[in-house]
Length: 382
Image 1 (cartoon, rainbow, N blue to C red):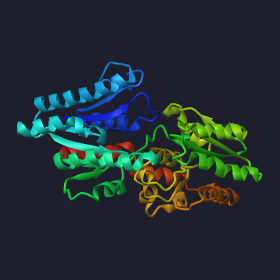
Image 2 (image 1 turned 45 degrees about the vertical axis):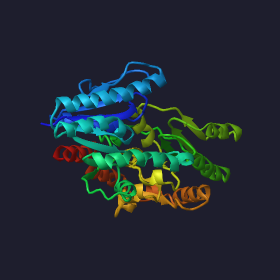
Image 3 (image 1 turned 30 degrees about the horizontal axis):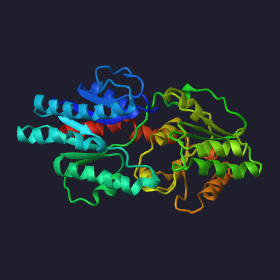
Image 4 (image 1 turned 180 degrees about the vertical axis):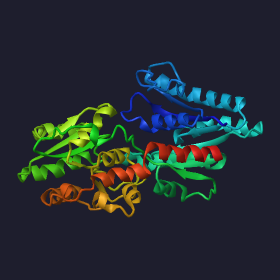
């Protein structure tokens, strides 16, 4: 049986949602497949109940030393894998392509059959530096196209977006975000809802993700007399968002909470009326697959989201399970505000009982087990 070695430039203890890694490792274990995950850490080495699968590369706590140390250790570890094994799988995210190339070259020199895979879960996300960041992205990925054996992507549109510039005919697979159905199960939680209409978001909070736009869109309705509470949970990366709330004195209805453990999120979602994903039209969001979308659906909530490929490709003929807003409308504040108004005025969140349909949708297509199976089956058959 082949071993799978998965490298990521991720501080696993820093992210609030580590399901992508943990659930895939659990699925591998359930199939008696030896899958080893290599990453780094921010403050502490947390193994999430998987001490035999998670490997932290590095010891130093200094941010800069740690970054250099990690890359050196990736080079060495990948080389050792090639020297030790004959037909294993080495999978890396795009940031590490350059650092496993020595192992890839040695694999050819020694005529071994280890396979190399690039797993792409995201593209650069900063609008201000996106073009230059994507240039660096393709500088690395072009090496993978030349030397690696296969590629995995988070959405079909991401594959098209990235691969259109290459003539490569190498194997690919799409494996999306998933959801833990046991954790995100509405029957586990009791109603604690206030009388206000609760608009909810969790994840990275930034201007580029549309979070300030969502605040301003909700503010229009609050100023018109609508009883709305907007709750956003996560790391706020733009001080301008916090300053806006303070300057406008709107903290009575506009609330920011710091990141919370994943186990706390289902109850917040359950007691909300409408989860909103306010992403604007931007290539990075078009190719993504927001894990939070699957979590909202699993609880039984319809979501207000942009009509970007990341969402429209998911639902295909199931558009009754989502509310869309026009992501290309130049006035995103008014666009989202008007959609919120329609949903509230027409009582659309309660008009049709689609709660069970939302959950069944992710149960049929987007459990972590199903998504992990796609990835594992793909790399093992290379």
